[in-house]
Image 1 (cartoon, rainbow, N blue to C red):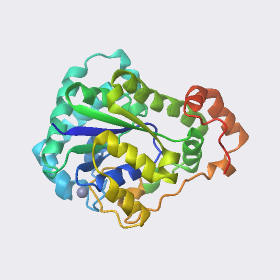
Image 2 (spheres, helix red, strand yellow):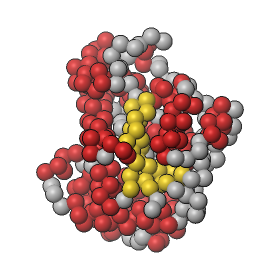
Image 3 (tube, rainbow, N blue to C red):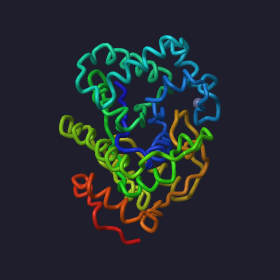
Length: 301
Ligand SMILES: [Zn+2]
């Protein structure tokens, strides 16, 4: 049975990048941030990383036809169910069965259209407020292996202060309201979900730090290689030699998903630019996870 690799954690943590690199291996197929699929199809304004609109993409067009995702009423219903089941506040509801079945069938179709050598499909929806329960729902009927990607919340905060990726891509005003407060709270919650997952399914969990991954990709990829039992030496080599990484069929994600060459570097601009107020907000709201992941003191550039 094929398995879902679920990239969990907060956004702005390098998930698009990690998925691109893993997806370039024949045994792994990157689907992108699948949580946006229903909305993207309703708006019909999003592109796949292959460069085509989703409805025209080789891969997605087949899947969409097979699963009736071209029916706008059905999409609205699916998005309604998704919000009712995946969002953090839905902890008060308990009718996840219907939605679990639907997701199960959808992923079976996603898997069916991947090349035969594919062993894993990757979903990089992460675990922010709007997809807090997603890996748990998927795990009910499918094999799910979580890669929990963690980045220093102060780096995520600085990214958010600069503005939202998706909005920049759509040409909208990228500024968020109360970015530091929002990041501090959301960062902790987005890391709480995969920590609960680890507690429940400890064998299907690995934690990778963004800072380790960009500074020493060999080491992080070797750990992931063992975890998934997939040889990633080609990917390590591609990064080392700065070779072009083939484009996949990732939905959503940031602009890195369709850049041909990827040069890894630690984006630590925040160390110079994040002011004291924002740092205090982070410490006040996020100290338990900041301590756990050792993001308190190691600030030296
Ligand atoms: Zn595509």
